[in-house]
Image 1 (cartoon, rainbow, N blue to C red):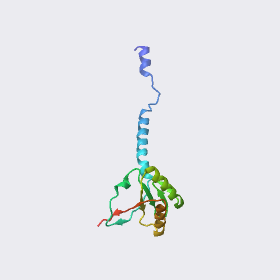
Image 2: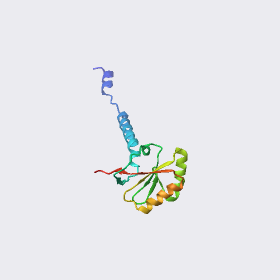
Image 3: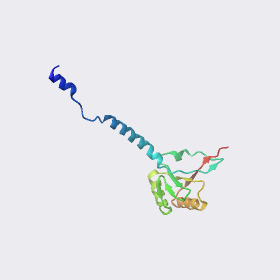
Image 4: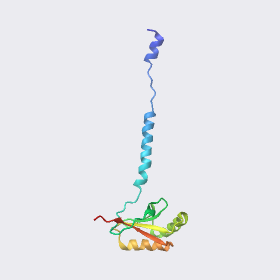
Length: 139
């Protein structure tokens, strides 16, 4: 056998092929980008009502939603706020979204006084319409 041909055959490629690793990393990045917004949503067990009305405007991206957790924490959209900051945040949100309706999602286990104070803060921001979000009661 020719000496030059033997050197070409026995030469070992010692470089690492990173293409499969990059492919896996890109797939993981896409998965995390899709799942992360779902994780940061506030988890609330809404009160169930027999005569609940569907409010499709609450599902829009620019909807103003105030969430009251069972432990009394208040969220404006996905941002945690204190009851003192809530009025200012709603005023700013109403100006940027050009809407006069605010939706309130309250946990079924929240204390009544906390909910009343939150609704009062929303009303003091100049809200014309207030929507209370509930779930349809299963019979």
